[in-house]
Image (cartoon, rainbow, N blue to C red; front, side):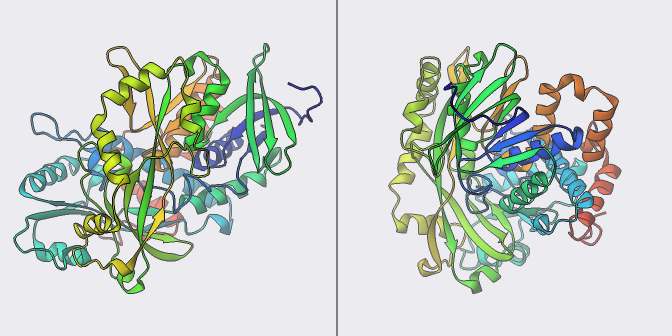
Length: 506
């Protein structure tokens, strides 16, 4: 580094990226040890402007109630619900942490970021109806999914989702499930509120318009982080004990800059997205649900079609999509050189092998890219038969970068979940990937803290604080129905939602 580069005071923690992950980790660490100093760098001028933003986020309040890709059908016809159980439990942990913050801090910035919106799955065709019936039977064995309703009665389904059923052929076989405890979460609002809380704490500084240029691991185990102010061009450096890279699609290039051995072999495959956004208030008012269907064969999880009610900045919105696309950018505000610049000697083979084994995905993305407005309207009409083109406009969603990593048997595999990469000494960690992402941020960060701060995490003080922030930590909620009910009633009350009892779920 240039010795003339201005230097900030040493800090305990550097967070790169002002999204939901960094906000969660920062607040968690300050609760565990209020003496920690934290420095945050964000390349944009505001927090939560990329993947965490409500208009960019491909899904809100993921709790596995309606997402059919979390419950694949096995070759023998049975339903694998293991991932759904895990995600549902992780989302309960997120709500507990948000309730903890809400109880402790009376800050209006984090109010009303969460609302009850019924989560529904909707399928068409006899084979899919039987899949949904088996899925419902399997999930409702768990306390986490108690109260989920199944119906193949057209009149009942019409009462749940009238717009979806209006104009639909009477000959079509359909079925749906409904979970009233589903929620809509504005992660943009939540993230900005959490950073507001974090900045109020002593020892925390935020630097917007700062892009990280270099990461150097020093002989004493610390990291030297060099940034550039994107407005002025001025450089800045800081020395820290721990670095977290939570920059969404921008995490992979930063991880590569760290040169840690654990980063070798990781690559990224960017997938862009678009929405059809309803602009007719009368249509928006008549739909109140998140209705998820089944993804096309070969399509990524972020492309699961859904007709999605959201509450953004206090106003009800209705989106359909997302329509997938391809861009070499890793961020919505990134560069077209992001993908080629990320290709290195260590990851070129895994990326080629993963590409060869996912030709169906490539074909799907090409089909999506060349879609016409009429094609997009036809896709919408599968879920909204009477949809009119003039009621909808095209909107650009966020970028997602799916993880590619080395695999001994296949050479390289494409992952659709999230992946935490940490150095052997725990001094740096990076979060890669997408879905379910934000909804499980608390669980992901709890695991990160325990892995990167093992000695402190084992102390009675930190253990007690973990349980204060997330009271059910260490429990298997799926096997404890009373604890599930107690927890949901408490978090619903604190977060300003109606209680499960008021929904008729005891």
